[in-house]
Image 1 (cartoon, helix red, strand yellow):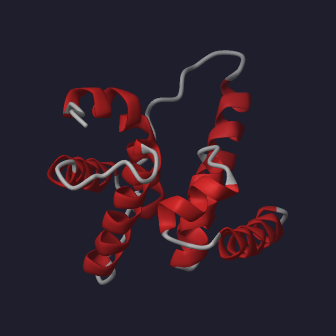
Image 2 (cartoon, helix red, strand yellow):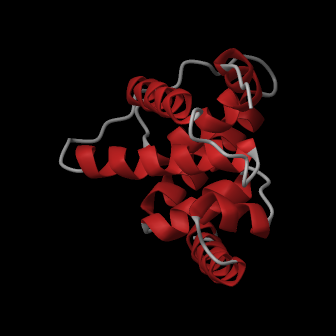
Length: 160
């Protein structure tokens, strides 16, 4: 089909980065995971037949690599550096509150069992149920059930 890796990076790099962030909290490890995903996408382009959209194909590879990453790194101690990107000024509290909520959501998504984490990540990316099913190799019904369970779990833990 003639896909160029530069165009895939431009179109789907942010998606890959956000998916990687749901599997890894450490920014350095996230970058490594993104590189692994991009390499796998590049290597897989020769066999991509276009049966699903390129977006779902890329998301599927990102999730598979994310799951593999979690398996390989499950025994490593976890740490998360402080975020120095906050700005000073009148809206500091608002920015900090928003950042804390986002970090809490990301942390809670990381705590979900992998099947629920995968559907939640794609839903947060704006994927429709059919795209989630295609990306993860599920039936639409199974994807919807998993998504409902993930939403219920996240709603419960985020309200605490």
